[in-house]
Length: 604
Image (cartoon, rainbow, N blue to C red; front, top):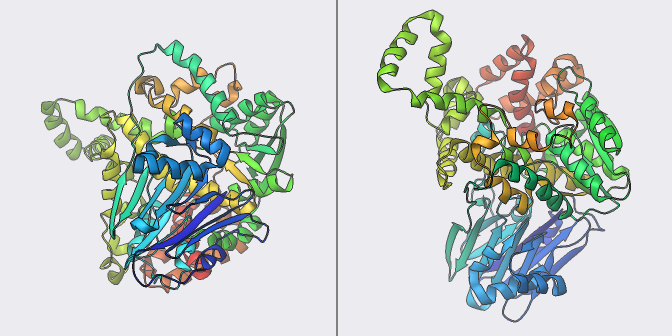
């Protein structure tokens, strides 16, 4: 992975040149060997570094530009210029010709900054899927930006303070979704969002939105096209002899392994994580895939001791609290690959969010049926279900079906399972808007141009599940391990193709990934096609119940959280009792979130 950062001032009191050094030194995972670049102007500085290569940078009398990632140019002249003189040069020339509309000509993963100091103008943008992150701080005529929040917070002219709303958002979503961050005054760009500063005025907007238009091609033709798109997407990741692949044994990682092996003249290296815990270990399926495609499988079993060693390191590495527990196995998998000489990993993330593979898609289709029931039938059914105990399940279904989307997706959220006054302290609740997470969900859900339930959920997940969560997890853990990562399932050609598949083909009835499974028959093993989704889930709650060291560590961190004044100590006590009463896996999720929050606060 690589990272960009810098500053721009339109005020008379511009920082002294060299302030960018503090931003570079604040970067997590930076080593002395990390290639880096910088360009300087009296009112602006841009810089960046990477694990294996630095971002592209360009400077002329008119303009400064830097771009991170692997952008794909939709304009042939700009593509040729990028090949000859670099992506930053192409970005600068494209802007000078088309202004902000140059962003329409860039796809693929990227984050960029472009500055015209004499025109008092700056442009920040991230790619359409939010694969590459970028955050910013704007105050008193100064813009400070970075791929990591620490690169912004390191500046002495940025006064950082923890935002209580961000703590609430974290416990609600298990991450802090964009545009918010853990700090007051610092914001993250959302997928396909850009920020312009012109003569002291700031403007944020979405420069692009994915269209959902059903293809007129018959299913047979679409199924035939699927493999060509997958092969093109895998080749676009530019694999070489030092490229390996994550392999969980699921549909996406197995597909990536199979397509990568097809491209390479030698057996590739695949890396799998196992757990000695019932219901969590998928190594059997990884072995089936490895044998099917004749790849070299490398297995690593994560232990409770590994978890204890990794928690402080991971809490320190993330620039804000991050609660996805599968960061632990992702880190060990990437670290294991690095030790075997791998410099780039291909990951299968994204397939469920473009081909409809998450369980909630089927569940919400069931609830959506209720709105088609005639009103007179509902007027009879609802009072009956409410008054007769044997119809308790029917009443529960009706209650959930009557909650509008997308709020209905959060029915089982921990913060909806108990009154907020029981979870949080009174002083904390006075500082937050408990409706903000739902409002953010709602705003994104309504932004798509599709009225189709499944397509709207896919659009929502592209932002909240992928950009805010899974990609942040894999990107940062691979960076920590010292390897680059690319995502074949999120290459532009494949995502565009998936968006044209009608939802009744994506899901046949309530069947998840119906179209994809049918298309993969004869390519993936039958056992892989038949298995349900799992992934690199961490059995933290189960292990905490059985491992004394993990239990003691968790309880000490929960006591630390109890002392901070965010939560009611009684809630934490009840949470521990519920975990010990036999619901270890379920309540382990909230315990994990609190442990990682406490660890992050200690580390930062």
